[in-house]
Amino acid sequence: MYRLREEQQRVVSEAATIAAAQIGPDAARVDREGVFPERGISALGDGGLLGLTVPAALGGRGQGLRTSAAVLDVVGQHCSSTAMVYLMHLCGVACYLAAPEKTDAQLRAVARGKHLSTLAFSETGSRSHFWAPVSRASGHDGSVKLNASKSFVTSAGHAHGYVVSTLAPYATTPLESTLYLILAGDQGIRVAGAWKGVGMRGNASAPMTLENVAVGADRALSAVGKGLDMMLGVALPMFQIGSAAVAIGIAEAAVQATIRHLTHARFEETNSTLSQLPTLRARLAQMRVETDRARAHLTAVLDSIEAPGPETQLLVLEVKAVATEAAASVTETAMRACGGAAFGGAHGIERLFRDARAPIIMAPTTDQAYDFIGRALCGLEFFS
Image (cartoon, rainbow, N blue to C red; front, side):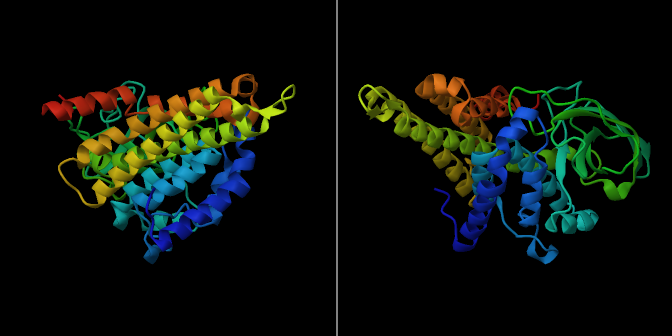
């Protein structure tokens, strides 16, 4: 459905090979032990895929949103935690790419598979309202100190670079933020807890505190007070598209797992498979249709981004909600179709069921997306 060019398809095929051989086999352990997917991320780095969107001139693969979506889809089919870590890395890299004169070293390291990035937007005080940090930078003449309590930072303690939001020193509204690049070696960074979530247990989505972290003007990725523009114009499209792709990957994995169960599990008394039951075939068909519909919607959004029109903004707002709700529905149907086997942990369906629910509450949450969509339809300001 992604309608990839030959070069794009080669990249996705490489990702699929890595995912099948090195990411998928570790997925159950990552979930069971709640550990960061080091093997999977290292495999992506070794394969040059951490630099998926880095320009070829810097050693990267030079790919855009369409290829990123297809790659995240196939990674998500094998391990949701790895896919989410990878997505947040691509979001961080997108911010690097918006300020290449300040991030040349990081971009080259990303291309070599030696630098993992992530976002640190949400805060304890503003919760899922990622666009309105309550922390405030202190300082002047471009050199500032950051003090913040960040919540749900994916790859916390594992990333090499964090794109951090904070209010500008003289901000008068919650929307006047600045984005800074914080590096893992900077003094004053502390991971404040561990991730013990229901789903995506390996993405290390932990709180972080920044205590008097000193940065210079060369670390400001956005103009002072203009961080919201980069959040919405750079990070959000990648996050929305990528979240949708990961969710579709989860749904696809549930479809394939259900097919395997229905075509192999047998009634011994009749020597027939579960696929002989029309009710279960109907559930499987429903799953296939919902997954295909969500992927088709994602493709339509990609088309609109590549050829922008008046509907583009609305489609970008819709895409994460459409895909994550589809994944939640598909995985619930898989649990029903596969019955006791699924509830007992067979085929990883129970893990997919849990993982599908995590993106629903990732900011912007599905409920927030619906509100934004409604505001857009009514001609209202998003932040008022």
